[in-house]
Image (cartoon, rainbow, N blue to C red):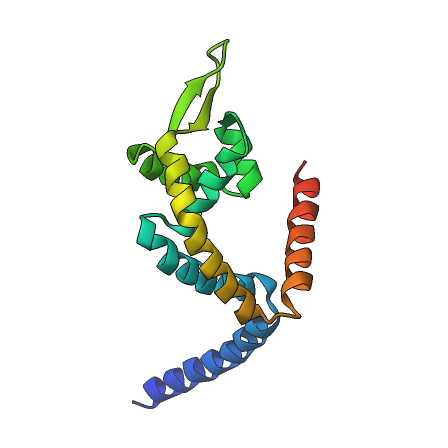
Length: 165
């Protein structure tokens, strides 16, 4: 009985010590806090975009593909800072909806993605919903914080891509 109480007390003290350290980490950890913001924003954007059958990730993918006549999966993954597995999973869903199609290069060595008419219509329908989500996100950030925050995030992405290259 005494040994059990001692073990429980030792475990409890260790848990309290580690718990304090973890709480401090949560207050200063960029990754932890950005992931929290990301989850909140994804939920907000998804709630609006779901009205036209898209997720925020699918909307981002389609919006990126629209900017190009045809884009390789590798280039798209780099542009979106997304790993190929996650991108492929999301591409499958929008390919099944007929929003994108694959085209092959003249030399047939690489496959590229191209937006379809159905994809253009889906994005066109999503834009007003995205604008509502965007307005809500801007208000959550605060009207005076939005521009500096966006500038910082873009710079962070740019700097991390330079280091990966």
